[in-house]
Image 1 (cartoon, helix red, strand yellow):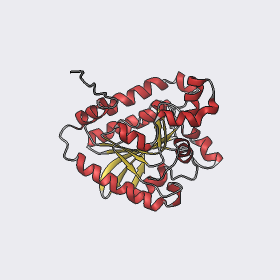
Image 2 (cartoon, one colour; image 1 turned 90 degrees about the horizontal axis):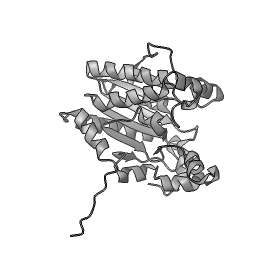
Image 3 (cartoon, one colour; image 1 turned 90 degrees about the vertical axis):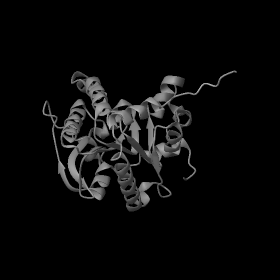
Image 4 (tube, helix red, strand yellow; image 1 turned 135 degrees about the vertical axis):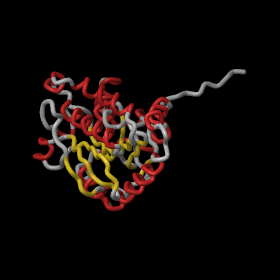
Length: 269
């Protein structure tokens, strides 16, 4: 892995030039059939959901979208999903469960939309329901963090049997700016906060949050996206083959998350 500071990796993770969820989906899947709407309120374009094929195998694919141009960013609400987006994802997950399709999610969001209207529509409930639903799924769930994964807005799509991070992806409870503002009352110390938070892919692999880190070309995934797509393809194939042998996928997922943050106490005797 390249030697970069945590702050430098945060910058790379947020780069608009970086391949987004739709780039990965178009590169890795065929017969992509998009499914829209939560069947309750409206369509949230910041979360993409589809039925597709991965090397001929039917799967359900879900990904967050940030957009690159100003118009796209406005359309996708800068990658911050509303409750309708999470409810759409839940609808597709239940469908995948019914038909036995593996679920693959691509996560790249600074977090769920914190606006008044989102709270009024039940943002907290939508995230909590996604966590509960994903925890009990009996089909394989593979999560790929491709950029920035922030707070419950990311976790709502990231309760997987396998969690894969790109080398320059970051995953944290909140942004370094928010961390610095809360802890030190100084958002200007965001670079320092990034180091303290242990949010890089390498940190998360050591902590057991990530199961695999996929190397990126020097300077970021945007410098050779085809190589990154191929690496993710291999990772998905390997993990799907492994999970096909797991008898109780819900229990496997439960044990994975229960083991995070466990501390072994040394006896004095």
